[in-house]
Image (cartoon, rainbow, N blue to C red; front, side, top):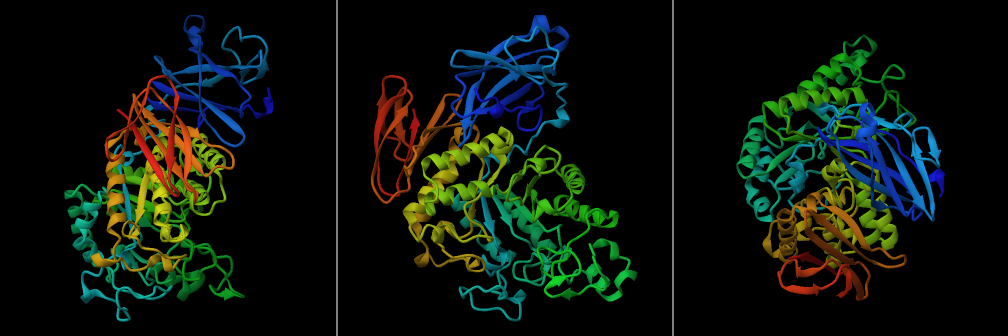
Length: 583
């Protein structure tokens, strides 16, 4: 046994509550090292009567480790526990005090979950797990009212630059609500809609006002109401890390310097506010002078921004917030933010933009989820760039599953592209079959999938600003076959709970292979997904459970398996996929 690889500690993703009487316990061991791991557990006050040893299951593996898991029912809402490790005829017991050859005689020195408090359970809104999101960049989606166009507006469909405008607005979104319904999405995430000077609106001028080129607050309220009537939730983008240089408090500081009543609203390193050799004398987003960083530890700033958060949720009726540059704002602010937002609407979704390990923000006291860019990278590196083989891809996803609790994984915001990246089709080198294979991975993996506007009709584009092209509305210019594919995969995800809440088990993950397969399972429902991202036909042997397996779309029998985990030979075309459902 490689004991240095064994890891566990109570709380976080290693011991967490899923309801008021159930704990999920995990432990990490070296990959392939243990034949079996079991959990010794009981109540510390009645240890002799309550203690037992139960086998754990191998949840998932990554490149280095196996992650074992067990669900424990707590009748008394507290637990002491340790681990039994078995490998090659050797048995050790692992406790908070270390490793021992003998079974602990009592509960002293074991790991402990002192008491399961309902208020400490991580719980994203129930609707999120069933959502399929659609991201809209308002300035480029549709121009529904030419009367509110910027004076320098360009013809729809022109080449996007960092500074040009095409007149997209909220009325344009309302005019195309039928497109969203036909596609099948049931939630929309808007990039910023508040008054700002740029086309992307990440330089907020007024947090309480819809940008006049998009409409007004009443129109936004009308849009939210119309979306709700059509079963579609609305999430807005909150830029609380920084504002724009036209934000009134910042303008006041520019004018009055240290004497400004708002001097404490920003992080000023040197007066007066200026730019020296390309670096502002005040903290900003990156080194962008027009985006000064807000001091969210300042009580007045905090009060202002929390009122912004409350107003749009409570008065306008939005269903949640996506938080820009969320990891650069202090944790205490996000705790207060969550309290205010959840008081206004307990079912509001709080989604943080964090591109790295986000566990500190996902303990139930700050965000409900983060934008899952590590998932994005794994799919793109496997399907589009060829940087990962099947083994590497499975290891990357295994690491992510091991990193977070199951409720966190199920609420994660899974994207393949966005306004901040090149479009998926571009990354797939305009290969729509490869694009479909990537989307199949997205829609059958745990978490909440999001479609970037226009992907469903074949829009392409490189890195920002090229990925922010105008939406294509002429049917003759839309890829209707691709649209139909998106409709089908969205419908399929909605119809099968196993894709939203089921366990994931990799079936094929060979080193050097460009074909991966995995199974999703929930309460007897089984779905097997096989994806080939190579340019050659792949014939694979899939280990399938007993029963009759159907094609996901045709509902016709593909295989009948008579014995447990018998191999089924499956031929996958180049850049192809297969989804099988156990009848």
